[in-house]
Image (cartoon, rainbow, N blue to C red; front, side):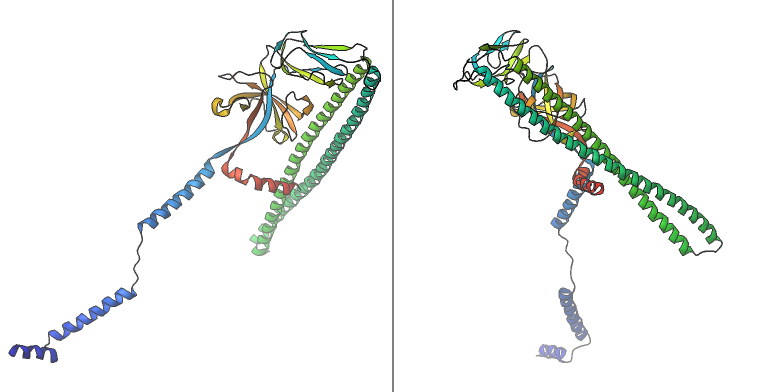
Length: 430
């Protein structure tokens, strides 16, 4: 019974050793609970760190590629193969109908070999003499040609006058801005002299430092205005040069149109004079050639000057005749390499081929000179490119093709900013 009594005494009164230990234990428990609920702990998970590092690496890599990678600007053009000296167009000298065809597309003919026979009846179904009917057709064609010539000449002349007025206005504006630049330069020179005197006066305490700083601010503002005027003058100078090139190209086009109309008029007058009474006309090949196209419609009617056959002289090297949009005029130069894909040969099997630009005709192209149909929906100029050596499939005149020409190389940053730069340049030009 002694043992329980001792234990009871410890619990009630407690010995000096047991009571502090109980207090310490309760405080420790309370502190542990406080630390558990009141002290936040920071946990950094490894996947989050890896994701953040990966994102930073991707952003840095994208910026590096944008600053160091370049973009090659290219333009597409349609064209076809022609002999180096050009193609021959065989036209009818009189009205009638195709009576016989002696050759086919792709065949080779010798000089003087017959191609077609044009036949005509002495009397038409309406009872009119053939010669009178031909004369009436030629008169109508003459009137149409004269009206078309007048319309084309008036249109091109109006465009030419408009460009000339624009050039005159730009030159007047350039002169005005030049006078402003000179005046601004004189003002800056006087302001610099005034600043020098004020600095000497400020050194002696005659003026305050605030006045000196105000003069310096005026000079800085004047310098900015001078640079703005100089940039505007440079923009106008470039615009004048571009407009002058357009005027020269338009003048050449107008001269070519007038020459073409003149040739058509001569051909028409010759047809009028040569409206012979014979019943047929034999068309022959002027030189040894390969036939690119020929009319096969026996019995169809033909008019004087109508193209009935297109020939490619034999034994000549083929060149690519390309029709490039006018937007690339000035960026295409002789010696440039052109990538060519022939429509007759799939790119998946034959790939692409190279050619090198030899000649550039810097004037608008007349679609009537085309020997094969091409879908041209915008103004173009003609480029002649020599075919490069190497393994090429069999080629023949008249084959249509697609070409890509590299114009210039730009950085990705410059390429992305190009629309903004053009918009800003247009705003300054206006």
